[in-house]
Length: 142
Image 1 (cartoon, rainbow, N blue to C red):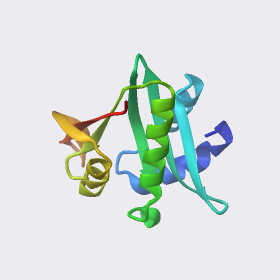
Image 2 (tube, rainbow, N blue to C red):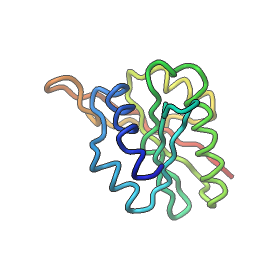
Image 3 (cartoon, one colour):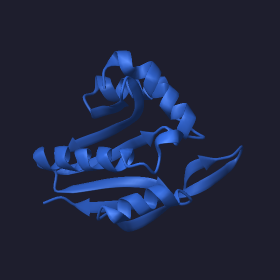
């Protein structure tokens, strides 16, 4: 991901999430040197990924795919790339959070060897005033 991808990244964010990241968050992730990737099909940006890697741990902070490309293998390819990069950078574990109701994403993570290790009550905003739990997943990489 480069700074000139941010407009397209924001389009993907807003098309896929009820509570998308802000442009400032995405810019900050690039600025601090997180591992930020985009996925393009043809000349169209259809997904992005943000991951931090430090102290032997990788944290998958955002994996987002346009709704019309979900459940078509795009997210799986991006996730596998992130796992390879994290392992190459000597991370021994990858962590992530996922919305309780995001069954498609949870199935993806579980099929790639992630295990639920805890639950964060009220982690995500939901609707006007509600909150949704997050499941925390981990995967050993080494």
